Amino acid sequence: MKELNTYVIVPAFEPDEKLIGVISGIRDNTDYRIVVVNDGSSADKDDIFAFCEKNAEVITHEKNKGKGAALKTAFAHIKEKNESCIIVTADADGQHKLEDIVRVADAVSEHPDSVVMGCRKFTGRVPLRSRFGNSVTRYVYSFAAGVKVSDTQTGLRGFMSDKLSFMQGVSGERYEYEMNMLLECARESIPFFEVPIETVYIGENETSHFNTITDSFRIYRDILRFSCSSLLSFVVDYIFYTVFILITKNLTASNVAARVISSCFNFSLNKKYVFKNKSNLLPTAVKYFTLAAFILAANTVLLNLLVKYVIGNKFVSKIIVEVLLFMISWAVQRSFVFKNKRGGTDA
Image (cartoon, rainbow, N blue to C red; front, top):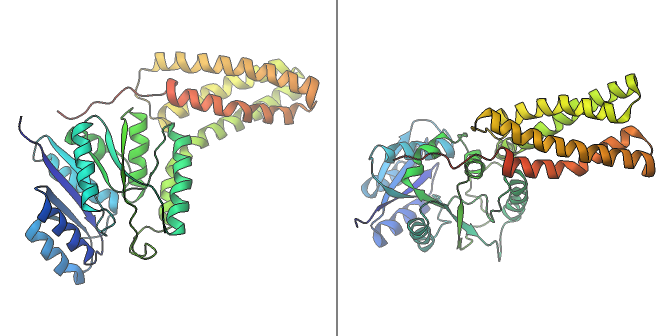
């Protein structure tokens, strides 16, 4: 059986001499092919990229487009070669050791259906912003996608070339692309395989071009979309519940009527914008409204119990019940109702 080529993609923006060390290490110790993307770096970095051109394929963006765009450019370049191969992405600042790059590549060959993640353990001296940022993002991602990943921000990842079209289709041009990749993989039921790697930081990670405010917003903007639909649906539900209560004075009838309206609204939002579900409308709708009927029954029972025996206030009770059932509804929608079957891959 012919051994597969391995391509290591290194996106680089304003790199220093550490990029030379990364390229030299890969060149001198492996037969991997290297693709460097110069993402609009200034002219004073020409000497560094001149070295890269002698040892790797270099693709240049005239203007800075972002890490996600740089990765997609490299994906398109490799896809044009029309060969089955292993793809590994690594950072240009030397924070990924050669042995860890090799371990990720080897893991891809052993787990070709998975996206392999080189995951740091965050032990020893780790900059506070890196430790805190990864911890928060890890928990938010787990809630949003229903999949646990120990290091959501690692740039060391690997996969087979049959996923190139999928990776090109993931939204995002800058740092949010890497988080979107994880979200889209979870939606498409593409598994992750984690490889432990060494945690390496130079100084206080000052070479990173990650902007804490703007890039964090781009990342969390896409995750928060998962939660906004439920919030909007709750607002619709609560408005109609209030109106019906004031008109009919009937607790159960008001709750049922409001939930029917908000469920239709929530189904449309979730299928099209939140989970981007591609399944046929009818079977998905059947699953969704079966869940909605169960949630409605539980909602009505709990609401009546709270109003009658615990709180008495119909409006406060409504809020408490909605919060209690939110997690159940979310988990079932994410893992069953709107879960896409494994998406198609390249030939």
